[in-house]
Image 1 (cartoon, rainbow, N blue to C red):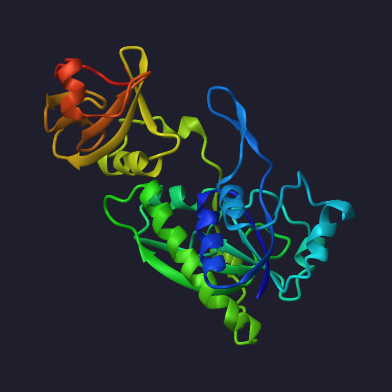
Image 2 (cartoon, rainbow, N blue to C red):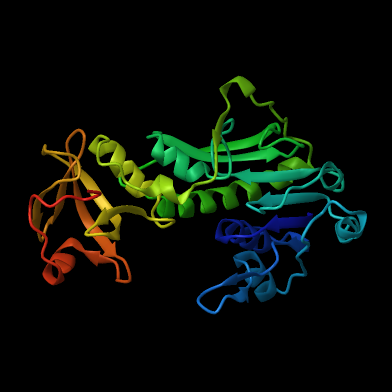
Length: 308
């Protein structure tokens, strides 16, 4: 099929690569404008732009699509369908009407659960047993369009947002490649979403990643996993930020935030219910270290408090 593709991060690049390898004609690749990044704040291309240039695909980076002039390259591409994955730019109704078969969005949740910006992190935070990919016919609402296809994926007990992202990116790429021939043949019947079951996944704020040791250990464990790798769950220790990258619930009791034991096996911290064994951590300006390596360079005694 002749395709318009719109996406920006690595999640979208995975789908773009799969579509190109499946032999589809990518008429135009839309992605966000280059953004300043790194210490020098130099403009950095998105993962989608980087891949598109490697594949020799045309790239278009509009700041908006509200004007007719901005939309003209899309119409001139004469594509049959538009595939969208984590693009980050609102598509006005005029864009949705350009391709003959409309716009298909690859969304990283089982809609209508977790509509919005952060479905992967929200699913882990909520303790969901499963998530998945929904391929949706886009409309003017926020992830409200009818469902074309859905694929489920269990959430492992040690799943992080990073590991789940990679699994869902691969799953979404496979599903959209499978869908397009069926869509072209008219074999897909869109199913409306049940709006009464909708749950929203708002954008993650840095303050959400601050650990509240008064919560049960099982909940704190989910916070650590949901915010790995971005922005990183954190606590305060000796007046500085201490990021927690890997941990697991453990037995123990004490005042929340109190270090119960500090050994090479891990740093055990009391929670509101149970305890959390911290396995990997990072102090401000330092590197990510195992608990054993961290304690070798920074003694930490039982009874010390975090977030004091």
